[in-house]
Length: 300
Image (cartoon, rainbow, N blue to C red; front, side):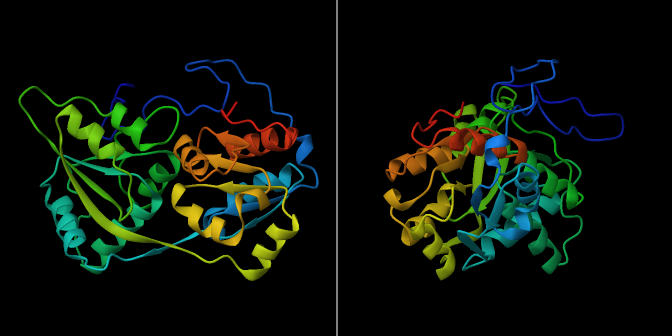
């Protein structure tokens, strides 16, 4: 477990540990060799994520000689009943919880937007500590003017975030609020409960499978894409509704939880981006396309 970063004078802590690309040892000060991305020249990549959240990756792929198309595999909708989310927003503003843990950019947006709709100020009381599952979620929090006290080192996952949480003081049971999808996985809540925290999961939004445009589905069937990137397990139904596993090009998973979900559906995983960053994803795509006949299933 990584230590909680010390707060700077007059400020809040920001991150814990280091995010590492595949193959870089923890704590290493050596500059890693730049990856060989020459194989991406001319490649066409399908990114299973909304265009608004894929600009950086599209740019990184273009710099490596590849073209990319971003198509959302899920739709995010408000919860059918907002009562629990409203209560959570009020609890965060009044300081009735010790921690709040965000496991996605969508969860950040749901809480911030609902606080704005309810005209709640402040969004977050001064004493509430904030955990983020990874760099994208942490960036979304900072963009919203909220602090970040804890992030896991290494892979961005609920398991890693649960491991990074400090143990509560003896005899105390701090309350952690988890605003999350209606189909959120249970690993983080279980890890926190096992450490002695009280955990309150709150359905902050609904995740609904999207339908791929007919032209994209046709291109998948025709073999027009050299690689497809899947960023979360919730995107699998839309992808598999458009094409059977045997019809898919090499698949890159962002994170081990996504890779495990793909394998559960008998989708071969060509490579795993071990960090949810543009650089790590480009590196994984390069690994996947290095030899289409030899899948790289362990992310290395």
